[in-house]
Length: 101
Image 1 (cartoon, helix red, strand yellow):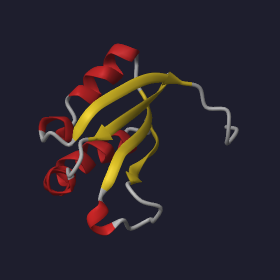
Image 2 (cartoon, rainbow, N blue to C red; image 1 turned 180 degrees about the vertical axis):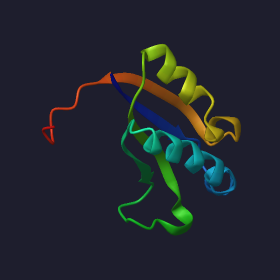
Image 3 (cartoon, rainbow, N blue to C red; image 1 turned 60 degrees about the vertical axis):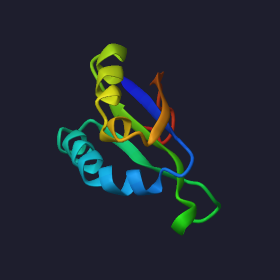
Image 4 (tube, rainbow, N blue to C red; image 1 turned 90 degrees about the horizontal axis):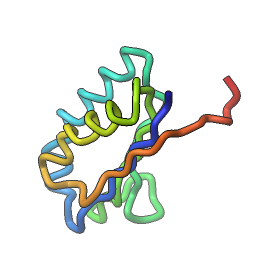
């Protein structure tokens, strides 16, 4: 099943985010290589694809996991969590309707 993982950044987390980014991306590449990734990316803090020093407000990942518990465990182990980037992470089941598969 698919799960939506939404991380919400703490204020002024850009430096911590940039430091943890390589490890965070490596985990996303693993999901993609396993054919389990639907989409992933950051949410800019301002209305711009390159927010510069304004940084990011959070991230969204939609990927396939065996269960809600597995998705939650994967999210809890994210390097952004360990680095204090995320104030909170929400994991919910997700049903993709569009684009049609």
